[in-house]
Image (cartoon, rainbow, N blue to C red; front, side):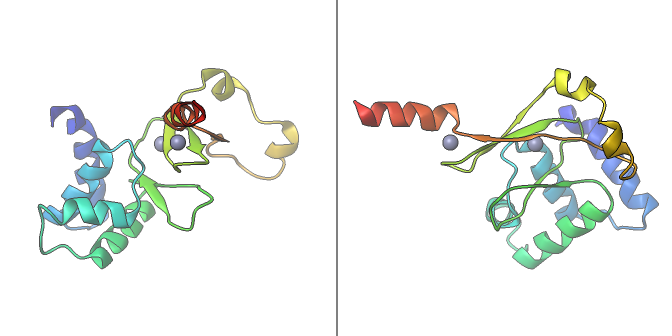
Length: 150
Ligand SMILES: [Zn+2]
Ligand SMILES: [Zn+2]
């Protein structure tokens, strides 16, 4: 997984700097998030990982994700669902959430990124990130709709 060498190095550095032991389980949880584009929930991650790590528990996944979040290694994705979804993507991006299948799709929006926040917002405090969440219906679900009509 040379692709993620840099992120793994940052991960290990962050763990070391915070006195967090780099266990096999922690590394695998982080790697799984890096490799996924699906913004999985803790439950989804657990189901995937337990196949390779039978000693893993769902509780460990929950606690590990909370720790990673505190260290800024993973981000919680804002959704309207009750289940929290996570990602390890470090590059700034935005989300499209499908109303039908609840899929969360990453996209870039340079034009939006270039817009500075209104002065009235700046007066509310210091802004550290600005992200857009769009809602709609993904192309997969649209195609399904179309085939059902016919
Ligand atoms: Zn969909
Ligand atoms: Zn994302």
